[in-house]
Amino acid sequence: MTHATSAPRSSFMPMCIIALLFFIFGFVTWLNGALIPFLQVVCQLSDPQALMIASCFYFAYVVMALPMAMILEKVGYQYSMVLGLSIIALGLLGFIPAALLQEFWIFLLAQFVIGSGLTILQTAANPYVVNVGPTSSAAARIAIMGLLNKGAGILAPVLFTAWVLGGFSDINLTLINEMPAQQQQLQIESMAHQLITPYVGMAIALLILASGLSRFSLPDLALVASTENNEAYAGEANQGYIGKSTIWQFPQLVLGAIALFFYVGVEVIAGDTIGLYGASIGVANATTLTSYTMAFMVVGYILGLVCIPRFVSQSTALRLSATIGFVISIALLISSNEQSQISQLLWGWTGIATLPNSVALIALLGLANAMVWPTLWPLALAELGRFTAKGSAILIMGIAGGALMPLIYGHLAQSSSNQQAYWILLPGYLIIGFYAFYGYAMRNWNGKHEGQTPT
Image (cartoon, rainbow, N blue to C red; front, side, top):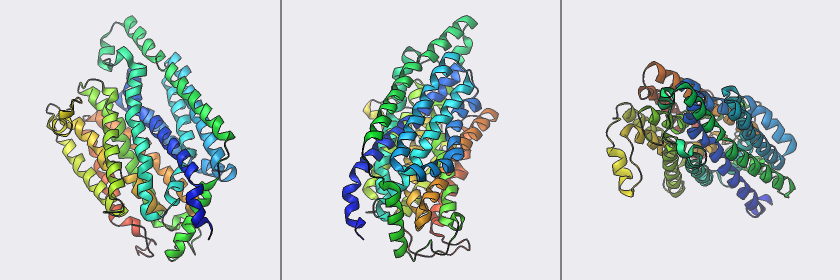
């Protein structure tokens, strides 16, 4: 087949575009980690209410995944990107009336619109990266994209704190509540208005990018490459999709979507609650704490690039991730808020501010989480053939874990304590572990492991 030799040359520019998109994914997504404690102050929210900021964002993936997949099939990869960027820009502009009125429901609506735009981008981008080359090295390709994604995640909270907070970096809900009513209202209005300029700037940048893409002649390679590669690999793997009529006949996909649901849940908890938790125990500059989690995710991606598939297989990396996440979660539940030996050992010698052990362990979850997404996608999409596009949409719907699990954490934090609420991580890592040790290799619901699965 001629596409086997031509694909590497023709896919360079699409991969550059995908790389830029993954940076945008990360920047917009991990702004939430700084936005949550900020809006908790501006809108006077409880922890469960504040975490709805993340939930509305991720809930969009559930509602919009299949409709966006249909749009993708109709208009193609390039114009889906243009549409997605435009929708994100629209959501960012929604922060203008939200900030002027300090109305929480408008912030939530804007978050849903942003999540909807990201849905169509993610639905196309992830299977493209998986199938543009050999499945055995798909995790490494996704890891490269993940470095850009999480690198943006490091920058986003820091830039948010610099652009938006300015002199408000030490303001928290407790201090706001202690102010006289008139001073409190002036402080809240001043903070809210600080959102407008940076969000307008981001919206303009995305609209310029969308306009440029609409005029650029970009080959619609993503879905073509996905179908061709999967059909080629399916031939080598006993044509696993032959004889199957629905997407639900693929256990590796369905169980993968369930595992992805819990993975996104634990990832969002680690990235988006660290600021709330830090603020609750008096850590300074709590809006920047997401950067610590993202930094450890970057370390994890680099390890994945070095080790997969050279030293460990994709399935082995997934098993290690689940195991490390489970162990760190147990340590988090019993760790100290007063001592800081962990951060002193890991980075105290660099001059970077140290953290209490409990906060440092939340950040370390980034290391455990880093290689779950890159390894789970190729394992779940293995041997789907012509079902790959729908399979991708099903996996994208698994991102709903980011909508539900943080809410559960918030209610647990309110009924017990912020630290003990992290027990919700344990079942998440157990289910990821089940998939890593057993579920990924299932090819029939009777439990049989058939075909040659990419590991």
